[in-house]
Each structure stands twice: as structure tokens, then as C-alpha cells.
Length: 400
Image (cartoon, rainbow, N blue to C red; front, side):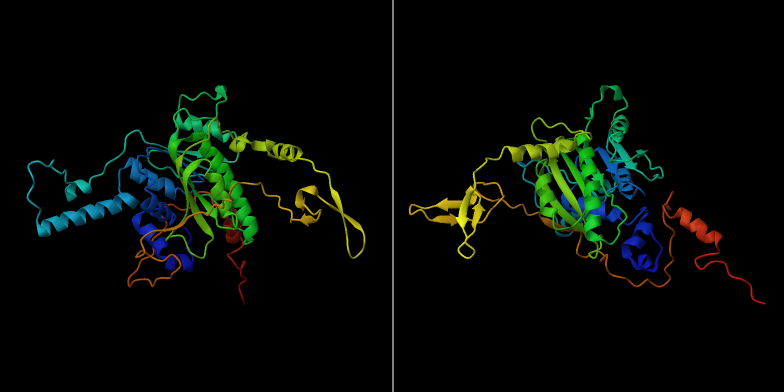
């Protein structure tokens, strides 16, 4: 969490420190849960690119401690409101033929309800400060050697000698909040982010169980529809969501994939990404070889008199012997053209803080320190050198 002037005016930055979150990104996951109910029937989770651990912290407090945030907290507020209304207007006379309705009291709604057999594994290249009940791994999600480490963390009885890259006890939810260091060149940033998403998806396919969920950060670009169509191969429902805590000026969004349904016969492996791997170029070349070969015909140019070669697949000859030329179309012929349009959903209460607005600090405001300072920031060495040189502007010399 930064400490610049803009950060201090950011309501979610201050709110994260007040509520004990490691980073403001915790609100993004909570708002996604409000919309999609991500934590329903979830006990086994993998958090990729987890540092500094704000999403893992949410998982720890919701699944292990049993605290209520997001969708569960909203449902509790609705239940309390209904109980208050019943107390004000009175309840109807019960019918002896009706089954008694089980009504939760406000005291029961506030009870912590930890879930049983919870397993959470967090992975990142950067070190993550420990969290209660969470297994942290320092590994590269783009490397195939990470799969055995993850499977071993999920199942202590896993034997790496079997060379299996499928989880014996698959997980219910895979999260990825990772993003590269942006350069400002949007095309380059989107490409690098897509490669990170590609690695996260392949890792998720190795550990997700049928019916599982996958949530990952993306950078919105012109190829979002293509990404949507590709993910529809593996998931029944796919949405592009923008939490209210995510700044509108940022190109980031989140792809939310629900109900994992792998194709028949599909076996995930980082050595063969998406079941194709490095054979994609060979498959494309083979498809080109299998295309029908048609002999070209000649058509005389009326201006120059030269004979131009016209491919046979773009010309037609009618009953009078007149050639009709059609523009070339490399698309495959289907009964009907299908264009996938990714549904875009804005998450979060409209009455919540606007992440792009700068709110005036209240009187007597005291700036709190971050809950968890960065353990090994990439700029740590630069700060040490700047201090050695006397600060941002170098050492000053004393004047006589």
C-alpha cells in the first residue's frame, strides 16, 4: 500500500487500514463475492500471485475464522432488517397445518461459523508474510515445476514420482490477482498480462474440480471477446466484472468463470498447455495442407490486356459463360456466424465509495500505518542507495 498524497485521499486505501486489510485490493474480491457468491460451498482454494496477501487474508477470515463479508454480510443485513420489520408489525397467526419456519435471531447471525476441512494455498514469487491456516509457496506459476509443489501442498500424500499433474483432491476456487509492472504501452502491457493469465489458467485446469470457479485479473482490450470465447470451452458461464473499488481510469477488470466443465478426454498439463502446447504450429500447418487445391483460371484485364490469375474458389460461371468474381473470404463456412460478446458487469454497491474520487479527510484524522509493509519490495535496493547518498537530492554541503 502506497503512502503518496493520492493514496491518502483514496477512501479505500484508508478503509483498508481501518478494517485491518493488507491492501485495498481486498475490497475487489469482496465486491466480486457480492455479485457472484464466490465463497458458497468453498473449502479448498488456490490463490495465485498472492503477495502481499490481501486476497488470502480475505479467504482466511471468511473460510477459517468464519467471519462474514461480501454476499454473506449482505444477506445477514437483510435478515436483520426482516426481523426488525416482523418485530414492528407483528407476525401472522401460524397455521397448524404449516411447518414451523426456522427463524434466526440477530444473536445467531453474528456468530462466527468456521468451515470444516479448509485448505488454502497461496503462491507468489515475492515472499508473503504468514497468515493463519494458509500454506504459502514462493514459486513461479509459469514454470512446470510449480505443479508438483502445489499438488504436494494440497495433498501431503502426493507422490511426485508418479509424474501426474492432476490433483487427487481438487479445489473449489482458483484466484489470480497478478499483473505485470505496467510500462504505459497498453498493447505491450495487455500482451504480458495475457501470458500471465494463460499460465494461471493452465495451473487452474490442473487443480480445479468439475463445477469449480476461476477468477483472474485481465487488462481490457480489443481481444476480450476472443478470451471470452476461449474460456467458454472450459466453463459454463463467463463474465467480465469491474468492482467499484477498481479505479475506472484503470484498464484492469476481472474475468469470472463459473462451473468448470472440462471437455471430454481433456487432461491438463503445463507441459501441454490447454491440451495443445507447442504442437499448435504443427496443427495449423497440417490444417493448411488439408485444404482443397483448386487450379487457377485466367481473366483478361480490359485495360492492359494482360491475363490475370484468379483463384477458382472465388469465381463462379453462370449459364451464359460469364465469370462472376466474389471477394476472397478466409473464414470457415458455418451454418450461421457466431460472435461471442463478453457480458460486462459492474460490481459493488452504488452507494459505496468512488475509487476515482478524492475525499476530504475528516477533522482530526490520524493517518495509520499499513497493516503489513512490503516484505521484499523490488525498490528496496533503490531506497537504500538513496539514503546512502543523503536523500532524494543527494548529500548537501555545509556553507561557511
